[in-house]
Image 1 (cartoon, helix red, strand yellow):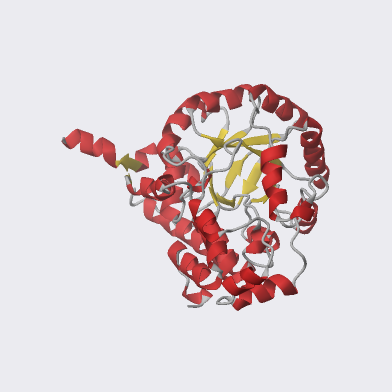
Image 2 (tube, helix red, strand yellow; image 1 turned 45 degrees about the vertical axis):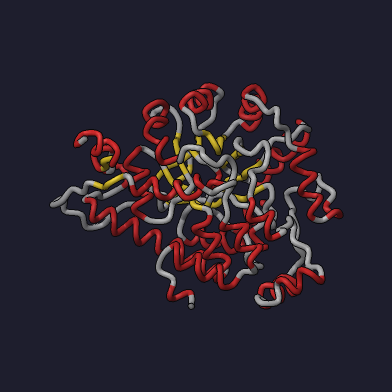
Length: 389
């Protein structure tokens, strides 16, 4: 199977599965506990029908959107994800370059493997920085100051990860972060030799956002210690309000799900929220962002930019979310599988296919631009079933 044979999410996933060692693939592919939420994130879109309009004279379409003060050429952005250079040696460099080519935002994680300064200097497309809340308030301020000085436009605080999800696939495969090749590991990875060759022949694995603050000499245990010792599970709204004030710019909370929390985000001065359950990797059994979207948009959509991620695989998924009131949609696995499959060309192809799907689907919906979409263009299946019961 070649990159040119990849035409959708499932194709990229299959090519990634063929190219990655099992533990690495399952780290991307897996969710928490029984992976119920992971599956429901995508199936939720299937319970929503699109209602197109015809004879609208649609020639060209404008896919651009404005979110948190940034203009994107398409309503999909690359959500920040960790450890990208484990999946392909180009890592965040490939994702940032592809995002710039297609005029959209990309995110850099605290657990990113390329420095946010390097990526900001190389690429002019909007950049957000995802980080976690630390017990050391001075460290939080230092990380925000670093991002501000680098020219990062959007601060994105993850609020659904005060402890790690129970990812049983990783427990079964023995996956460790960061990965260190041992004799046993080399044997385990022998059936996918190209991954190991690329890993050892390129620059050493690093976590540049953390290396000034975390002693990485302990390998995998260093990251475990970071989550258990440095992150603060007592984080509360007052803490975040102080950070929003200190950042004094575009500030987004990733992991909001309830109306009450969305309203509180507005009250403390956030400019954006991302409805997210971390791709089903944290609390299994939680509601899907798409199912919760209308409720949150109705409550705060006129006061704050509401976005969503988790489970997005198709252009029609994006159109359904936009019709529901989302300002933009984030993707994670969608570009990670493509990254693992082929590096920068893979990510570019994934974004190109998504852009083409959205453009074609907008025309089929009779919409000249994203603003033409509204709740009138969708019907929820449960409401229909209730009417005919």
